[in-house]
Each structure stands twice: as C-alpha cells, then as structure tokens.
Length: 419
Image (cartoon, rainbow, N blue to C red; front, side, top):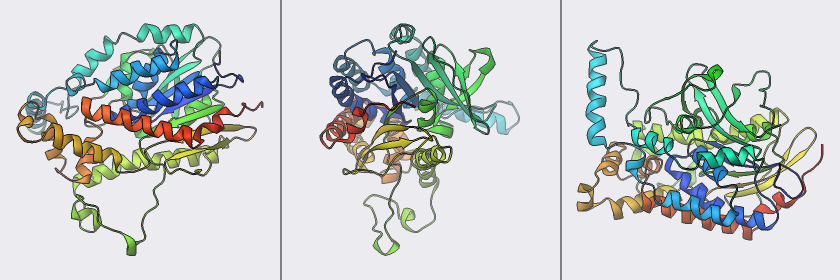
C-alpha cells in the first residue's frame, strides 16, 4: 500500500546524529501534517543511528493522524534524559580503566569495548511499548518498509535491516556495492546497533536472521544518509532530513576569520585530538552525504539538484536513467546553530553548583577540550537532556515551517512519474 494520493511511494530518509535526532523529529512534526493535508503520507522510513530511532518511532505511529503522531514523537524527544541512554561516568570510567590496564599487562585478552556503557538504552529499547504497533503497521500495509542502517564488523560493510510489507521484495545490492540487505522483523537490537557510535558506545550483537548474525556498530560509519536504500526500496519521492549541510563553502584564505571560542589550532596551529575527532564526525556527516549523492549520480540512480532559495533547504529532482524522483532536503541553515544551543544549555543547566547534581556532561565537556566550538559540536551528539532536545525540536519545527513557506516541499506534490 502506498499512502501518497498519486500512488507513488514516498520515503522519509533520516540521517544519523546522536542527540541531534531531536531536530529531525521537530522537522517531521511540522512537515508531515502539512504533507498529509496535501494527501501525501510516507510509506517508507529509512534511518541511520539516531535516524533509525526516528524511523521506527514514526513508523510505529503511522496509524495515527500525522498531527497526533507528531505530538507523541516530539514528546518522546523532549523528555529524554542521559540516564535513559548511558550510565554515569562515575561508575563506567573506573571499569574501563581497569579493563584497559588489565589488557596492557596481559592479565586479560579483553580490553574495554567502549568508553560509555549503554545498559540504560538497552533496557529502554527492549521495553519500548511501540514495537507491536510498528509490526502491525507494516503487516497491515499502512507502510511498505521501515529500514535501519548498520555497519557489520565482520563484513566491514553496511547492512540494511528491513521490515517489509507483504509483496515488497528484499533489495538486492548492485555488483560492486559495499552494502547488503537483510529482511527481518525489526527489534531493539537493530536500532541499538545502528546507534552504536564507535568507541563511545559498545558494538551490538544481532542474532536474527541467522544469515546476518554478528556484531554491529553505527550505520553512519558507512552510510550516514541512507538515500540509496530508500531508492532501492522503491521510493518515488524523497524527504531527507539531516542536521548538517551536505556542502560547505569555505572562505578564501584572505577572508578567513577566527570563530569566537574556537581553539587557536583550528585556524593554524597543530590540531589536537578533539579537533581531529570533530573533523572525522563532520566527514562522516557532511562529506559522506556529498559522496552518497555523487555515488548515486555515477550509478544513474540520481543526485539532488542544486539548492533553491533558502539556505539549508534543498529541493529538486533526483534523476534516474528512466525516471525523476522529486525530493526535498531540510537541515539547519546555520552550521553552528546546534553547537551554539549546546553551549547555551551547558552554561545554563550544568554550570556552577548545578554540576554537582549531574556532573556527567560537565566531565564530558572537559574531556572534549572544554568551552570551545569544537567541544560543543562534539558534545551535541551526546547531550541527551530535556532542555537541549526540546530546543532542537523547536529548531526543527521552525525550519519545517520555513520549508513550507518557501516552497521547499513543492517538489513532493508533483505526481510521481511512471517508468
């Protein structure tokens, strides 16, 4: 079943972003009700990392009117807390240090699997009350597919786990592709694996189906913006939500200006490990999108057209060898908006004596370099806090309203072409 009024399958593609996933929920809470008013509802959700959380969340709410589903999803993100995602550093760091020293001294062959322990998130995901609703929405045909992207440690490649409606075939990778597809009933292990940020969160074991059994980590390592899997699942229209821009126009050297709060090394001196980590994350989140789009173009599956008016929101047409796939891309206009919000929340909610209540984010901020643009950018991926996530939901809602006002969604209203 395809809920779009013209019969074309409409897919929502959700990038990985840790706690920044609240922004995606904010965008969808405004955009999906508007599209529903135009007679268009998604039949496919594909997500990576935090995007996988939103994919299964909105997929589970697909039986509700879009406005009602939006309220439930936004409320879930606004209420999230660190204690629901990872354990306190006060208990995990000593354990990590002991295991690390034991492995160095030859007392154990097992070193630490991660810096943070995600037992709280494991418990939360396994008892999540919406799994049955997700399965019902797919079994009933309200949705064609919900897919989450992971990275296999054994295969060193992308594996897309898909829960499919009857009659929807499992995608087959093209020759030379580095991603594989596995049809299954999605569960907590799939989402946890897709969200297992390397080094920070431990890898996750997936046992079903048996042909794909093994250890997995964050899907963003290989495919942070899963456009291609959405097309493979039959999407004829794409709405892509991210938290970073796919391209950044650098200032010419003569015009480059220091950014307040950024360490000196960013603008000339030798980079430290935090700046290198920030660059790696931005490579995975930003350059990977550009790479994904270029790969799609080379494979004649398509690429996004140049942006229309309104920085940060793209719309246009994905061009295939035989068809055009209308699309829209929405992300924050200001590349420093999210890190700026993280800085504001840290100063307001975790500064001074408030640090004594929950020192975890203060400790993480210090470990990341403390008080710089780089540290706030990195921290924004881990800042699972109601104040921060509520701010991101509002930011996403504002960008969603702008996208509606400036016509970014107009391409999605074009009737789907027939091959």
